[in-house]
Length: 316
Ligand code: R5P
Image 1 (cartoon, rainbow, N blue to C red):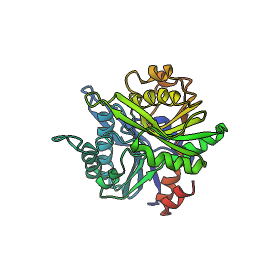
Image 2 (image 1 turned 45 degrees about the vertical axis):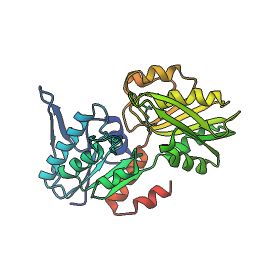
Image 3 (image 1 turned 120 degrees about the horizontal axis):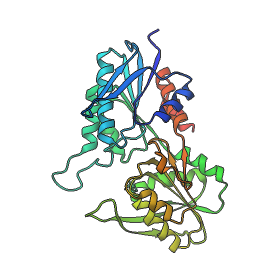
Image 4 (image 1 turned 90 degrees about the horizontal axis):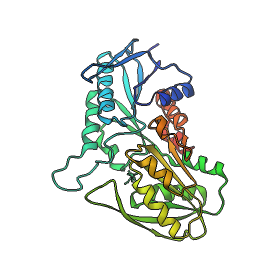
């Protein structure tokens, strides 16, 4: 049976690996992932992958460089072990926010990472809520893209919130927020965000363009990193008369004092995807985790069975 699906989980997000395996009704392949004393990573597939259709799940989330390197050596091992096709399922892609040269003599790290993944052995890549659309073009192999809007829209509907407006936290997230507004049949507003050029994690100021007075607000963003965007948006929206505010983000990077700052912010709820694990100190009552596992499993199933992935994603 060469058409067998082999699912391999990297060590970055074991909970998501297991959930995807459960959705697919398959077992995660037996592998050994280890760390040498000098911090180098080690990988070995403990079962044959010869001529198999292999799916490797790995978020290159913090520790970004370790998780990226682990992914690269997994690919190298699987290619050398004669896998027929290797698909990388990357729920979160580290370095995806360095997709352009903002000032001279900078790298385009996203492009470099894409080339490394491809060179190491990937034949196909599944991305999710990627920071910038051109990222798919950095690969010359097929890519799929999981859109978070249908997933978060379903989650938001469950809350039964009435009289709300969807607000984009910045220009970059406008398309996604407009799609959410259209899906939920809601009004749409936008915020103009300016970052501090010397300290990019800090949002210098933000202002609301549109009417949020007396309305509830829902925002969708690709990530919460230092929570600068979140912590600057909420007071500005409150000042403009917003009532309850819900913040949804696919990738909970949550660095530095983000958790402390979220706890101090007058929010009604924060919803995050499980593309990056929530370590115990990040599991606070304000943050609810929304699983993307069903959709990743759906994509893997269509890829394996040679069916339309976009047809599936459009049906969500
Ligand atoms: C644009 O800046 C991005 O879409 C996100 O808004 C950003 O990555 C979130 O980062 P932070 O939480 O540090 O503002």
